[in-house]
Amino acid sequence: MAMIAHKCPQYKVTVVDINPDKIAGWNSDDLPIYEPGLCEIVKKTRGKNLFFDTDIGKGIRESEIIFVSVNTPTKTFGAGAGMAADLQYWEKTARQILQCSISSKIIVEKSTLPVKTALAMERILSSSDNRIQFEVLSNPEFLAEGTAIRDLENPDRVLIGSSQTENGLKARDELVEIYENWIPKSKIITSNVWSSELSKLVANAFLAQRISSINSISDLCEKTDADVGEVARAIGMDSRIGNRFLNASVGFGGSCFKKDILNLVYLCRSYGIHEVADYWESVVLINEYQKKRFVLNMLKAMFNTLADKKICLMGFAFKADTGDTRETPALYIAKELLAENARLVISDPRALQNAEKDLIDMDGDIAYIEDPYEAVKGCHAIAILTEWSMYADLDYRTIFNSMEKPAFIFDGRNIVDHQRLYEIGFNVYPIGKPPLSRI
Ligand code: UGA
Image (cartoon, rainbow, N blue to C red; front, side):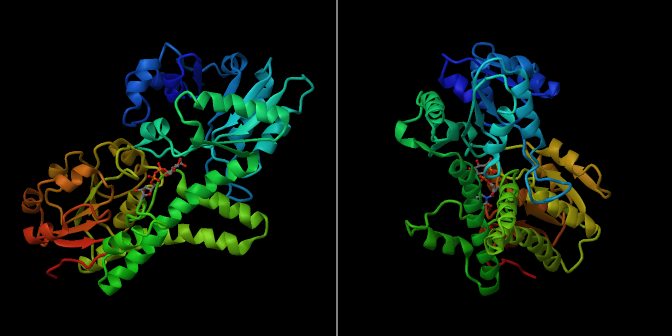
């Protein structure tokens, strides 16, 4: 919404939320989320044509177009628990829109939703006899965290799904007009509503599938002395495969991939297509396996006992350039290491507050230290879990000197110079490459 306000000064954009703390945060200099470049855009537009408010009724009444961006987490109760999307916030919003509206509106689905959710929205919105017309469009968001501003400014594509009726196409054209303020027409694609809803789930499933594919091969590389980086480069130069999203890692995290794939799996199961469901579910299963494997490799390398050993986790965010820790592999790894009675020092330039919240219920010895040089002091091992670029450039000789010996480094992101670290004296365990170890 900040980007729309920034690119379209002729529109007034109001963001409403039930959480007054969040709205206060958005109205302050300390925004509720860290995203490079976002603060600058918010500061430029806030109070001019971008507003943050808790008065949802007023926001609904005064708007002609409403982007619904409520969360749709994985259901934790009842039918489909652990798989299906929890649509309660979505439905409540639909009812509130109906209750507060005094004029016709275009409703845009921004949240990621199971296919056919727009139908439920339409049914709720047409359940009253107040003669107000609502047209529901699907306009999924494809931005990635950490690069959100760049992705919004220059997206690969914008997708708008509408019903193919006269009113549907008219509403679609109004939304196209907004994006045309900064995005070339060739990149704005349109479809029917169901294709648009499904494309969002499928895009995330394909992206996650690439990571699980290369991660599965990383395991085979470790067994065969092949190097996953070399394999990724060789296959990525095939233009049909492409070279992006082929970095083997400790596993993918984030609030979307797992949730969206499970949502897709649940949809397939509910239509009785279990073979297709199993196929996509395996993407998540390989990801769980990769995280588990990482901890077992640490245990094996460190003489099958981690009890009382001090281990520094470098990075807790699910990826670099964000403070977000939702579904971060680091959380699983921290819990498994604590279960082995290891002592943990967690370091991250942006995610320490969230890490503390995530681990609040855990017993055990956990310290949170932002400065990596302080964090590693007296540690037996380092596990690099987030690809923050600063971790590639640290002075590892100084770090080595301040650690217990033998010193281990487990590079869950393959971002450090393994040969150099080995020469300094570390026992080095990358992902999908032969270890460089004296043991
Ligand atoms: C993802 C998609 O990339 C966006 O297109 C989508 O809009 C978004 O989900 C969403 O549905 O909201 P995001 O979760 O922000 O974006 O981050 P990604 O860059 O996709 O990374 C996801 C995870 O995969 C991270 O843990 C990252 O470290 C990991 N990853 C990524 C790898 O392990 N290897 C890679 O080669 C790439």
